Image 1 (cartoon, rainbow, N blue to C red):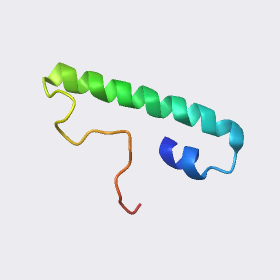
Image 2: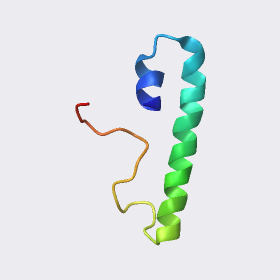
Image 3: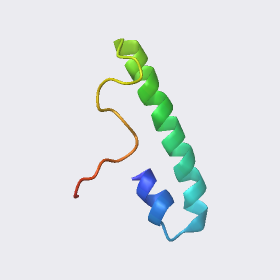
Image 4: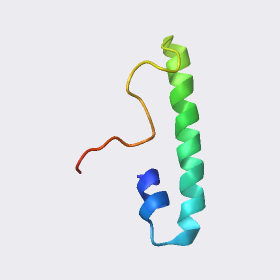
Length: 54
């Protein structure tokens, strides 16, 4: 959701917080992977969206 707001959002002031949210989520995902012993390349957790239709 934050990625789409940053990319396509019509409201400029929402774009900067969206970037912060993306960074925070990526850091949280990296921490979860570390805690699970999965390193940085395993699993499919990512704050970056995959091509899906919603």
